[in-house]
Length: 98
Image (cartoon, rainbow, N blue to C red):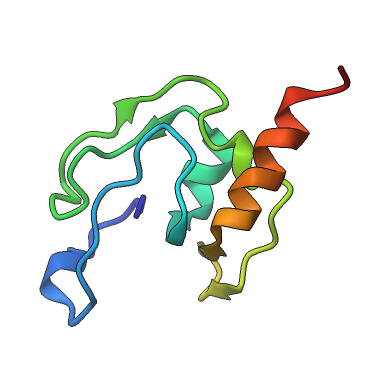
């Protein structure tokens, strides 16, 4: 989960979650539109929305580009469901031609 805003997702009745790391991951992925477009910041603690976003490697969310969101929540939150098969396809696509 990578959200930007003032809502504390830990106070909502959501299933367990953690901050999205810098490596591609399988599962349900939630990313704010602004974080997705900036593609260089993220939060280490999604339960602390007042904390300042941390720098991430530029392009750290590029692996999501070939995947379509399952839904757009409101106007600013992208929801993805990434399978292990999706991760394999993304890895192959990012390797480029041999």
